[in-house]
Image 1 (spheres, helix red, strand yellow):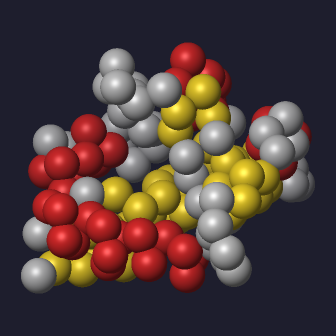
Image 2 (cartoon, rainbow, N blue to C red):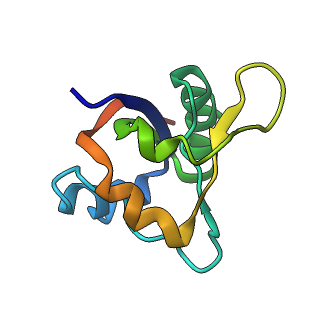
Length: 117
């Protein structure tokens, strides 16, 4: 059995409303927009929940936390970035490598939390 790493991604409603993740059968992340040079999944659920509640809900009226598994061998190339105190850690995957990340997802992308104003 191949070793995987659990990643979390806080998202706003656009990624779900536009059915981008859902349209892929919950198997792929959509390409980044030109102003989004990195895709940054976070390392823990608590941090993803915090971002979703404090940022996505405030800015967009709703927030979601997604969980997905990626082959550990692929994720090993990205150092974990500490972006603040406590549990604020994430991976920075360059936008041009997102398709390769998608190819290394094991299983489905799951919605594990949903928050609304």
